[in-house]
Length: 109
Ligand SMILES: N=c1c2ncn([C@@H]3O[C@H](COP(=O)(O)OP(=O)(O)OP(=O)(O)O)[C@@H](O)[C@H]3O)c2ncn1[C@@H]1O[C@H](COP(=O)(O)O)[C@@H](O)[C@H]1O
Image 1 (cartoon, rainbow, N blue to C red):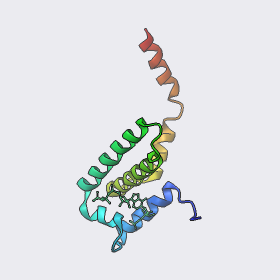
Image 2 (cartoon, helix red, strand yellow; image 1 turned 180 degrees about the vertical axis):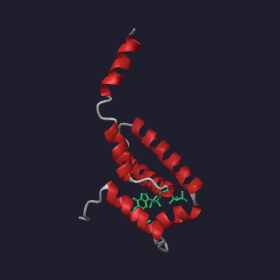
Image 3 (cartoon, helix red, strand yellow; image 1 turned 60 degrees about the horizontal axis):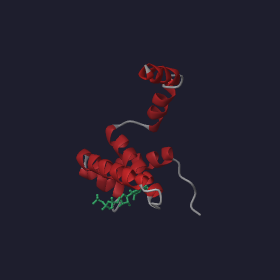
Image 4 (cartoon, helix red, strand yellow; image 1 turned 90 degrees about the vertical axis):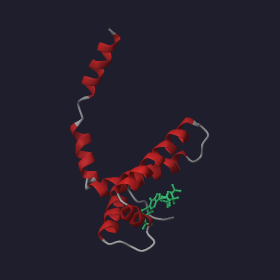
């Protein structure tokens, strides 16, 4: 079985493709086509996730989520943001849960 690749490692590979284009690489194809093409793919893949998620028995749900994750990482690399920045943003939200809870309490009124 192939070794597991986490999302940060996949991002590193995507950045490598950006720095050193490799013939026949789909990632290279996306960078060559540019931001609008990448955005189109992210939109399509997000829609496919939504459709698969609505169907409990769709065996493609995991596949579609993986496709979306890959294309979002290509978009991040295109825009020059890193998984570390996303992790930091998420970490900065820790502890905000109570505020959301408060908001839900307010809505009840
Ligand atoms: N994780 C992925 C990955 N997920 C999805 N895809 C590609 O995304 C495309 C999605 O399929 P679609 O039918 O929607 O698109 P398409 O018709 O092929 O292409 P378009 O004409 O729509 O642009 C397929 O060609 C998949 O191969 C990926 N391509 C590459 N990776 C990984 O990226 C890394 C670098 O790969 P290369 O770019 O091939 O070197 C490797 O680790 C790969 O495993």
